[in-house]
Image (cartoon, rainbow, N blue to C red; front, side, top):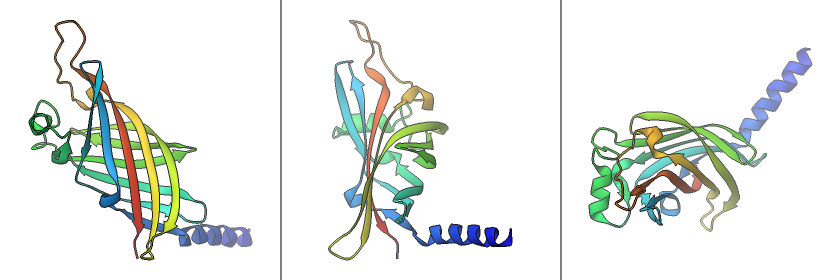
Length: 188
């Protein structure tokens, strides 16, 4: 029994030896979204300021943890007037809720489960995960790439502003498609 315990402790310790902490490289990452406009097209946007870290096990090629923090006031749809409206109390209310946070809770196959906090509300979300692998860059840094995609409902987070169109329907879709590209650099 004692040998079994020693073996288990050694196995757990060895798995941590291969795990590294990666900082999100914002110059090579993107936190983007799409939402229907007038029921016929998509408005595409992103957040310009964000940070995050994740644990990646080099031996098993798996992500062990992931936390991210987005500056809600950095929303960018390339239209200044629209961005200012999105920052207002009608939508994100960035003066009251300056951050959007994500915390990975588990991975099962190609699905990442986590807690998303936005507009002061935390909900469980499920995102498709693509592990893009690990490389050494020309400067000798170890990098890992991750893609996360999924759909959330903005009303679940208290983002309910909308208007009814004269011909019927609504101006802004409820479903928001998330498209996140992450490139991380191993901390030394």
